[in-house]
Amino acid sequence: MISLTESAASKIKRMLADRDDIGIRPAVQGGGCSGFTYKLEFVSAKDSKDREIESNGVMLYIDPKSFLYLMGTEIDYVDN
Image 1 (cartoon, rainbow, N blue to C red):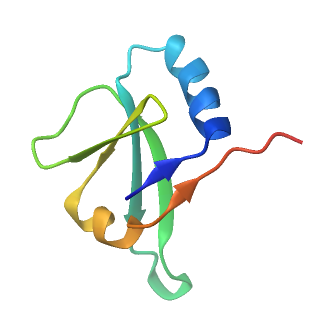
Image 2 (cartoon, rainbow, N blue to C red; image 1 turned 90 degrees about the vertical axis):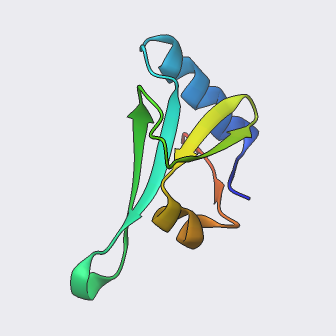
């Protein structure tokens, strides 16, 4: 399971309110010798292969390869 903390979900909901997007896409890309690169972007349309997860009222759309690496991840937002 991939989840958002209440803080992250609240921030994402506020950001989505100003956009025409339907959720977010957390992803992992190969990063060469420095390891993986983690990405988080807004999604305007679901891809047919995406895994859909709802967490604290926010839809997450994850491609199959990234899903394997992100299992058990909790995404948080801290503003300080």
